[in-house]
Length: 445
Ligand code: GLY
Ligand code: MN
Ligand code: MN
Image 1: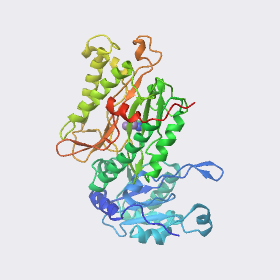
Image 2 (image 1 turned 120 degrees about the vertical axis):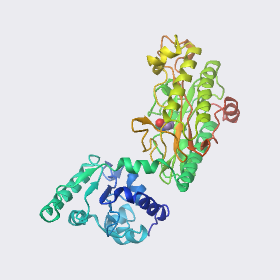
Image 3 (image 1 turned 45 degrees about the horizontal axis):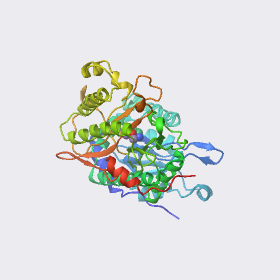
Image 4 (image 1 turned 90 degrees about the vertical axis):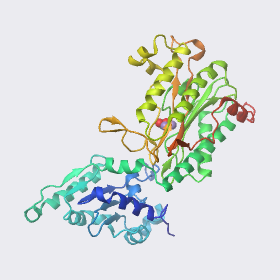
């Protein structure tokens, strides 16, 4: 039994070549995510550290990657050794030989060699890029190597090497998606959208939120997604007012709305979709009133997107429009400008309208550069997700709106003159949703 890299290795070589100048004269050290034991021999689902995968394509734990642009070897990967007994229990390992060949590294070693070989790899460099304080085990190993390297001070003239956080440099590279990455984002969006459609067709009064979650996850797996991008939020009724509701264990009731926020991963890229629709397939007048306001804003923001627009303009416009909506719905009283200045709108709209999207659902990349909001550029990928949340116990809200929580979320890539919506396969117009849900099964008895 053997395995192959998930995606062509050329992609990782290209990424390294692109970042080489930024790490010149330094060693970039990336470490694999740890495995977490749940109980006895059962572990939590494993997923590689995002930056580690971004630069190597290697998915095994207990691995360390050292990148020294311009030095020999330029790429070094420390991996677990082959172990027939462990592989019988836990599955295939590439081992140093397999990792060298399949991942096209200049040099590979067993991870047990790290403490002897890493200090040597640091001899030729002037600084280290390593993310401290994420993993105490690796911190200790890397610090030991840096300390060991300092023993050369008398000959090298270099003291303790400076340590920089590589997150910003790699994050900026991850922000602009390449053609392959755009394809994977489209695929993650499509898988996620198909699953939302399945859920809409399935939901009916009496089903449990958990059952709906199962329909979504089943659809993800059937479409060859290995895992979710984040834990799905399946929130019926007033549960939707909890932004990251995770219990997903209540009955979906006739007359309530259901908010589903779920996204699949594909090749380490994530979708992130929210739809809010009636459990019984038909919006009430009050639900329609709030839904239409949120949808209007969502479509307006999508229309704004094009290169040059500032990221913060999306948020400011959302706040402006939603505050208007809150006044029209009689949820807030007063002048729009005052309600914005006093931040009173936050009672009903308390999150950002967008976040970068990519390998992490809340992806890497700066939102501000030089203290100023960033301008949009082709290849950036983000969500558009306005929402309104009216707490069930809000005595000041008109009765018919209490307990309504609505969010509508799509994923986009910025293009040369606008944006490409990756998740439009799942309906969001009221008539389209009601038509789709018309084919629902009878109520659960
Ligand atoms: N799913 C989390 C978010 O929409 O930001
Ligand atoms: Mn989101
Ligand atoms: Mn979401």
